[in-house]
Image 1 (cartoon, one colour):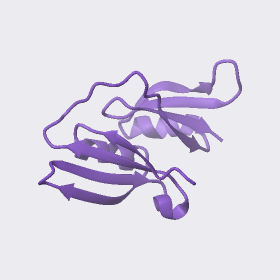
Image 2 (cartoon, rainbow, N blue to C red):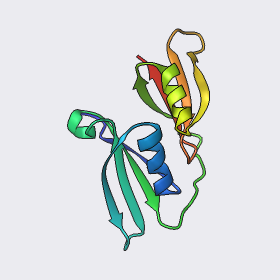
Image 3 (cartoon, rainbow, N blue to C red):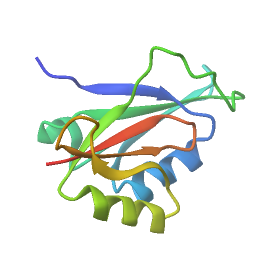
Image 4 (spheres, rainbow, N blue to C red):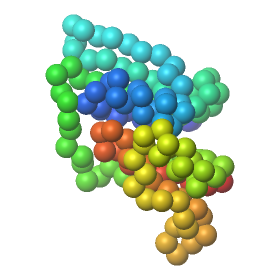
Length: 128
């Protein structure tokens, strides 16, 4: 078994695609438009996504809904990076929002950072 994708509801598809592709450097894999059902989908990932053994993120835009309440059960998506400090610099230079600068995790040695996407979803960068 493997995780295929995580779905996030977004308030503005263009804004979210800009963040995930231009700020985080993911690839847009495919899109689906369902005007009769009033939703649009976009799948993003590193590499070719599932074809490379990578999980994908499904961005779902429900037409006419521009914001969602964040649930208290949602935590974050984690992305492995070779250098969390450099990743934060690159993300900030691209207009992204770094909400926790790179540094050791509390009580440990692992270097992490957090960024927030345009809809408020947290993304953890883990240096490996």
